[in-house]
Image 1 (spheres, rainbow, N blue to C red):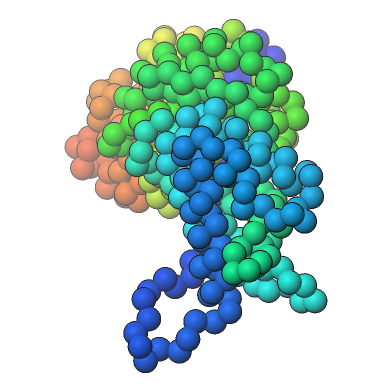
Image 2 (image 1 turned 180 degrees about the vertical axis):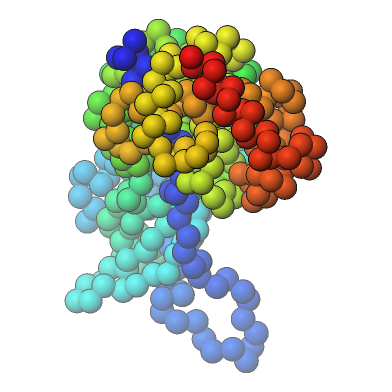
Length: 398
């Protein structure tokens, strides 16, 4: 049981969204100063990226690579080509680039340009999925040519690896060729999990959930989120409005359907601005565990017997636990998730799942205090309700 429950722990990671200043593209009037060399260069880079976009969406790899400078090294050329093939495998439907401030490199004819890109898969439009790349360009005969390419600090899987993919009605599942044989089953289970996760969205659930199946190397390199040692999967915010899921292949077993329901519930429930993530960890993981258990009896939660350990280790007075540390004892981890689940289950059983979902979004996304949200949504004083639910947590755990 200890081994199984340690594998059940999963996590929602927040904080990849990249913010920067985009170059001012406002048209100039006749009295304005002439554009700077940096702005002229940025316009030329945009033109090259527009050419790549057209080639990507039409499936023309030769045209996609035609913007490369002759000096680009073989590894970078291979990476750009690999990105093209991975995006095509995932059925890219749209592509947007933002060119950030360009800087000329001292003692060089190269320009250093950061680019933020976002891909839509299968359908468009879609919420942003911000992926950064660090690029260097050479202006040759008035045309920008890519001389150096590197993924940003949090590389998306399609930036870091050559992917194969399968597309279902609600899910896009992708992995490396090494794990291609697992993809059909991952997609099948994810399609079932999506039906559960849809119930917990704030407005409309994602048109497609994106699920990456990561081998050992990929688990440590995709997104570079440094997930806790005990996690079997993560939901990564690629923007405030979009989450993508990564499964740790080494931890996948008969519980994969449960992991998928948990993580896809994150991907459904978390989009939107989150102002107090640490404070409401119990709610964010509680709703995901509610999805994971999908109506199974509360006493079947595998972390149940560790609830006393988690409550004892926590400094909280009730069930409002904080996230366990990366190296936390497995009993505390298992128990913490069980506490979060039971707290959510208490509210959902008492007022109905739809009311609980409304309460969740009021607190997590609308930044309403639990007291105010409880009064508005449940029509009940939070102090008394939270005491009742703490009693429920303790009694259910025995």
